Image (cartoon, rainbow, N blue to C red):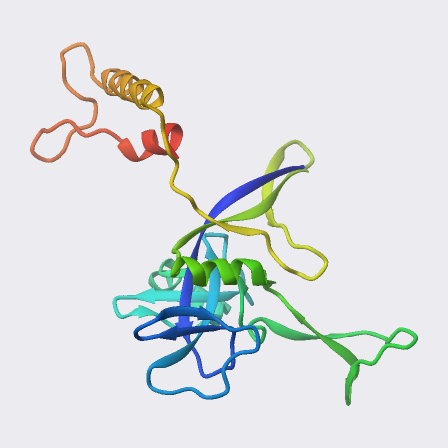
Length: 237
C-alpha cells in the first residue's frame, strides 16, 4: 500500500446556505467560523467542492461544466451516465463543504447511550458518500484568494486476481471522513535543473526523427509535431 498525492480541482459555487466562505464584491474571499447572519447584495455565501477525474459510478455526486460555467452538483444515474457527451463534461465530487451532498440514511441498532434518528423503518444515522474539506484548508483557501488546483491524498492498493494483479486508487480519509488536501504549489527549478531539462527535451525531439530527418509525427501542413504534453508530465510536473 502506497500513499500518493493526486492532482484535483476545486469548484466554488454560490449558495443560499449559511456557510463559512463568503465572497465580497470588493474585499474578495473571507472565512467566518460561525457564518454571517445578515447577507446583502455585496456578499454571497459559497460552497467549495473538490473534484477529481475518478471513474464515475451510479450514485456518485458529480458536477458538470458547460459553456456557461459549472452547474449545481447532481447525482449520477444510469440514465445520465448513458449520455456520453454529458458524462464527458462531468467530474466526480470527492469532498465538499456542503454536508447535504451525498447524504443518505444508514440504518443500524443504536449503541448504549447513543441517540439516533428514527422513522417507520427503524433507527438510523446520516452518513455521506463524499469527504469533508478540512477547516484549516478552507481558511488557507480564503487567505490565498482561491485556488483552482490542489493535491489530494490517495492510497494506491495492489489487488490480486486469479492470474493477474492491478493497482487501484482509493481516497484517503480520516475517522471523521475528512480528506487530506493542500494547494498545488508551482515547482521551482534551479539553473542546473533547467539546463538538464533542456538537454532531455533535445534528446526527446531527436528520438522522434527518423534517419531521413523527418518527424514520425507531423501536422497537416508537414510541420514536425511532438507530444510535449507527455514530456512535461514525465520531466517537469
